[in-house]
Amino acid sequence: MKKRYSVVVVIPIYNEELELQESILKLKSFLAKNLAEYDWSIVIADNASTDNSKKIALNLAKSDKRITYLHLDLKGRGRAVKKAWSTSSADLLVYMDVDLSTDLKSLPNLLSSLIRGYDIAIGSRLISKSKVINRPIKREILSRCYNILIKFLFRVKFSDAQCGFKAVTKNVAKKLLPDVKDNAWFFDSELLIIGEKKGYKIYEEPVLWIDNPGSTVRVMKTVYGDLEGLWRIFWNRPWRKTNHAK
Image 1 (spheres, rainbow, N blue to C red):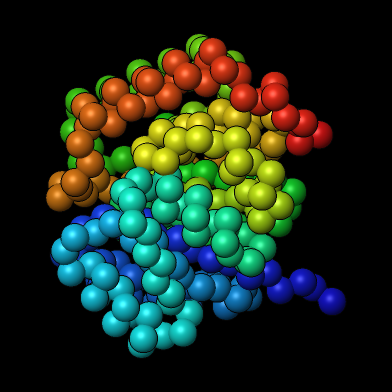
Image 2 (image 1 turned 45 degrees about the vertical axis):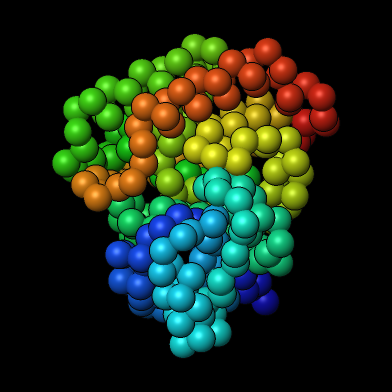
């Protein structure tokens, strides 16, 4: 008998009252139509919002038992994802940005890759067949230079560390998350670098990605945090301190 996998989709938020409800309803509709073979759920992981996000999220959770609300007292996207993933009992753990910039049509491929034997699955904007729309040239250049730097420093193969569209198996998350120390935007890069260096297999899915002009990401602050994170793990090499995946 074919196993029926459970999936949790985590949406980390911080002051997202303007688009939270629309995005969650869009995501729920997609999951209902396209993930019928999975037992799916959504977790809204709120890292210390100060607007009406909590009220909106609680109303969404009240309207559907497959939606839950998780509150954290401290800010940090990485912190929110780690908390939601580590406390979930689902077989497959996903996270994506609340603006749904990455086309949801790529989600089934991420999940099926994990079932086929991959450990980590990511959406990539920087590989063949990917399509990026309306991204400012400054952010495009910064992203490409950053990912080139990662490959140079760590000799890894994945192409896009920063796309907010990722999935892991429960077993891999249990083993890997304790090594990922960043609680902010560098979380993604640290997860992938340590994961690949420890021998986990990473699947990259070409995606359609449309820039959200209303994004609240502070680019230069994020860049500095990413560079500090790269420096830290380059010297600490955390993958050498624990057993490898294989």
